[in-house]
Length: 225
Image (cartoon, rainbow, N blue to C red; front, side, top):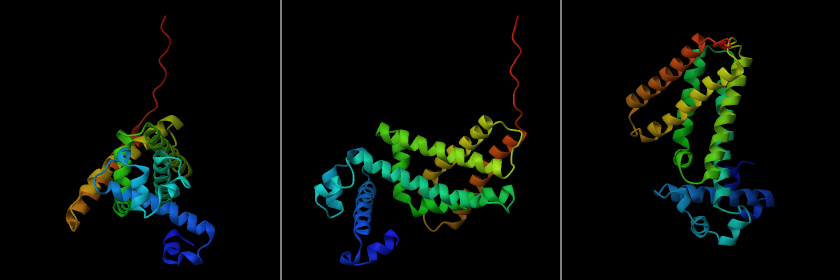
């Protein structure tokens, strides 16, 4: 049963595991809701998160040791879900252009659907808790490595070394992360602006991939003397 389905069921009909997941998810959503009011994650206290989730503070400690641990759960949740969606978008049977465009569309929709989660990640990526900054960097590394592995599987950029291919994928991931605030700032009900932004995003990634296709590995210079 999914979390949303569990939430729709009366609590007395849920299993112990489902009740635990429901409570845990309520705390995560409470933290996001508070940040949606303009609060920074580092300013949130355990008591107010619990209060927002309609729980007593002790309920928080049954799921998380501190707010950083809750933040780590949010980072992991985003990473797992988004990596799966983008991995599916990179499946075989499409041209490079199709893969780029489909990946951009999937990413754009995920950012829109998870606005508060991306506001949290964008904020913590450059500030806040060092623990969360490191966790976000680790997720970026996971994205980069998975993308490089998929390119190898698809037979793309065969002439690139593993290090160079990972560098290219790192540029793509960085470009995607940089696009998130622009996506979130897009005025609602502006399909032309959205289409223009999406097309510009696709072109940015195509430029990176074009550069990758033309990249030639530099040879180590001969020793002097």
